[in-house]
Image (cartoon, rainbow, N blue to C red):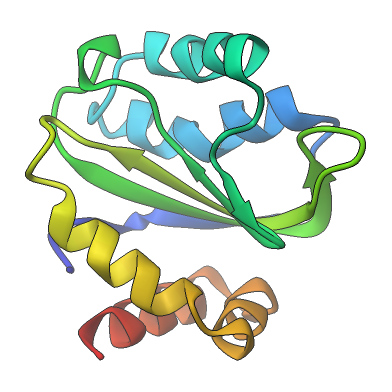
Length: 148
């Protein structure tokens, strides 16, 4: 899992203005690391306008992603903890955890998806991640949970 989530792609952010800024902030570490091109951000925003926030999986969790042909250079995850939650639609869930998935093809990310589902099937684990004191702490929690 450590090859799928690098420490530099984990961040804690106090607040964002709206869901569009949440997407920008959540994907930016992958742009900075050249895992995705900037157009990946635009693809997620465009998909949201077209299909709605399909990536909000449950309370507190959004799994941001778009198709691999929308500017993915290399598979990687990013984790953003929002101190103040954001809503992707007025009647939607409050979201404090943004997991951004850059999948280079339809198979290579399956291990990451399995680990993500293990982590986020536990409400206590979600709460612990959402309230992590530091980005190092959030990273350590994510990696440890992924190994279970």
